[in-house]
Image (cartoon, rainbow, N blue to C red; front, top):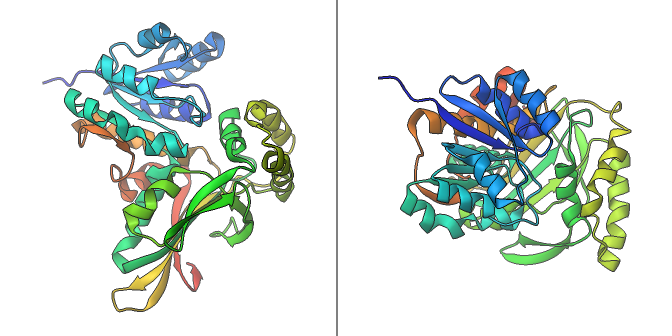
Length: 370
């Protein structure tokens, strides 16, 4: 019996991360990829290059969006940022009978996706958010370490991309959304308020990344991981490879903190400024996690795990959506309902996709990285 070819629609499908998802899936004979975006010229050129179709669409226009996702088996939403948006795309997917996944990293957006759970269950559809580095990959990394622990005290996740990796205005906008603003964090068993892009540290990432400066970030893990892993403290930090850019963002955080200045609308300007320094630094980056707690013997231990990129930074954030789409095409949804992308993907599945792209997994303990 011949398996039907299904339509996988990628919103923002010619962007940095959406483009990687679309291109990877365009080579899968089980699906036909539909690239969706605002720019007809850029979108058509990209779609033709990868062997996909193109559909022009403005997400704010409901009828335009409806036409773009018509007859889709799966819609992958990669047109961020998600910090100040609603669930209209996911709701329309439910109406149209399509599975939905997004690459959101916005804390409230990802954590709140369960509001659609009952409707998704009734339709037998999977609606999942955060199908990217956070929290799909971070949760898979931590779940590799949890068997060693009887009790987890601290989870500290840190992200540092290489400066010579591509980035877009959506990524910059996500950082600017919390720059200098108060972030609610779980520390020592209670909620505290800390400044966004504050609490500066220098952490030792696996080689060749090395020691880099990182700062507080607003991400879904802060909301989801305290209950999920029963940790006393959950932290998430991020920083850029070049200290100059980190210092500039720290400086810009001051008027945001003092006067409530909102810089998110200036993402394009900050992107252009950062690209002026593109020739400097490296392509090496890492998403690393340090977990501390008690072993089953009662001894205090630390375990480390990280994803390390050699030359292809966008491969990591886009990998979870590619792997999940292939699983859906192969066997359908693992469950129906709406939930953050936690427990849907295993680390070995992600690494099978990433390792041929020059991305690998490093491990370590209290003695350092191995």
